[in-house]
Length: 581
Image 1: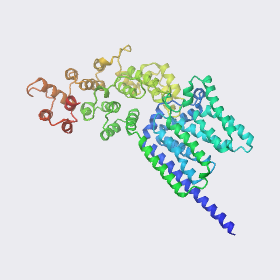
Image 2 (image 1 turned 60 degrees about the horizontal axis):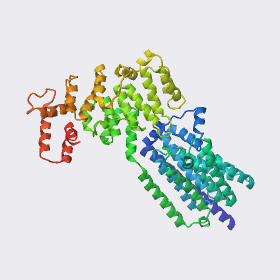
Image 3 (image 1 turned 45 degrees about the vertical axis):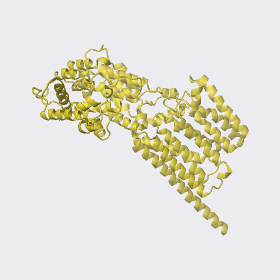
Image 4 (image 1 turned 120 degrees about the vertical axis):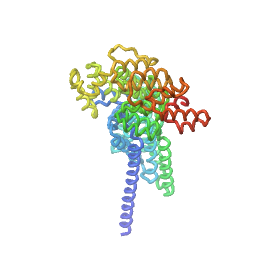
């Protein structure tokens, strides 16, 4: 009777313990889900737009032909669903929870301490995923390496099990990459056979050396992993830390001191891991990049009003963010009035020069597309795609390249891009609709945006692009189509940001205004004040209140009240930009 009571009590305690552990795991899942959905949503969009996952056999073979290729293919497959951040957050949270649960599952002794420590690898991977250059193949590779252990351990015969363990080493290295080493460490901790461990280690090293003859990668790249980091020559240190922590937790679990850990030790370990998780995630949370990716997302989706409202709350200061906001202002016919109500950093925030990288040129290309400089937009998009560090193609770039070629009438080139997009999930419908336009001039002209770009673009296809003569190009673009308001606004903005007032006045005469925009009034009033003794005779388009405010600006600047005070009073005027920026 006493024995029955003890057994019943033990069963109930075990059930309660399992429920507690399940609740804690669910809380961890929800924490990761909320973080990536609401704090890092635009990082997920960023990841998705720099790949082009195709559901084709050729694409699969192209990806899996290098060590870690299967994990990379699965990671890319999951990344395509980041198109919707909620789906992306669920996927990442599930992967992190999977790492935690599998780590605990392969521990030889299922103690409270082992459960608490099993969160450590998941936390390390969480920190890794805060870096936009760590790819989804990384957590997938760790999950694959962990999942092999219980699968192999399920084999009852010791001899067969040891043979399967040895066979799994080279296969797992080829499928998951160098993080497969953790399976060797974990199996060693579980089996405790020195000869088996040595044989597995030798097989792992042989796998690395043989791989250099099977694919065109150096031994260094094969050691650090090919598919974990977007910049392939950079080691993905947080991923390695996560993998090593998996092995360390299992090794610690195999020691005698983890048989019946004191509750205080378990509590201390739990608190330490929770505190470390909060500290490391907050430290890794890059808000500046998330803000830039937010601007980029709104630009990609052409959310002009939303972008300007966001800029009112989060003043854009970096050239990329300023470029995006200026495009929104120009598209919404607000550039002339409101441009200097936002921070401006010269022409670098209007039409930045091309740099061989994969982020900045996308925004600049959108500015050229908005003006109708279709060929220049196409060049920037193409070069940005070719600069993607891990040599992937971009669904976003492919879509824009298809559009530029449709506008230019290069239908066979457009068909190449559209054909690839038809092999995707989220771009298939757009590609199918775009394919129907190829060669059908009437259908193309019925698409308002394409008809507008054909009307705006340069009449001559053989046009020499020169950044040093940007004002001349913008002027020619406007003169060929005087309805191209965006090109004209960019022309005047170029002169104003270069502080070339004479050029501004010269170009301003190309258009007659019934009511001159605020920014142009300020520049014209300043030019008049610099070339005349008084305001008599100033063009009637300049309102008296603008002249009065300029006089006050001049008076305040002469008192030497300081740049901070002047910015407080006149920070949203062209005069402050001209004299203080």
